[in-house]
Length: 193
Image (cartoon, rainbow, N blue to C red):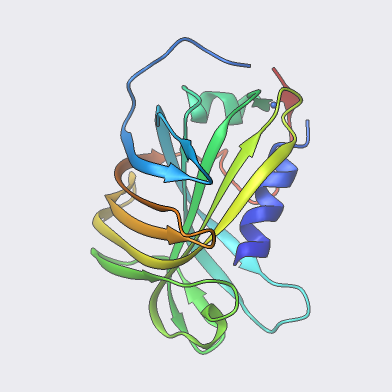
């Protein structure tokens, strides 16, 4: 899953401006790679997933938490933001090599890339990415453990909380109300603004 999330970030951030501070539907408490994140927005969508050279596929819920305001409008306009921070969280129910999007509320265990393939049941993966003034990824950190708790799962998106530990030992908690955004996908590209 890390490869999928990182691919999405690299495609999305391949071509990223700032905005005035806006209080949004997400919180992030703690630091990742020594950086705090003032979450301003969160969006979600159901995306198709497939990992090359591994017989694994299906679809999953993708949640994006960012410090850039107006995430869905920016995605729809193919506008990427400079010096942005993102937490990408994928959630789903894994049976064998098939992943399905969440069908209800519950806890989703966070796994790292080395252990998620063997996991079954409610699973999650997360990746933190920070970009520079040219919207290029300059820092990333994969989650290795934790829990994502979904408290709302419906056609409008996902709400919930998270408690995640990253590979460098960083630990964050937070919440999100991530409305559905059809523009959020794993194959995004745009212009750096």
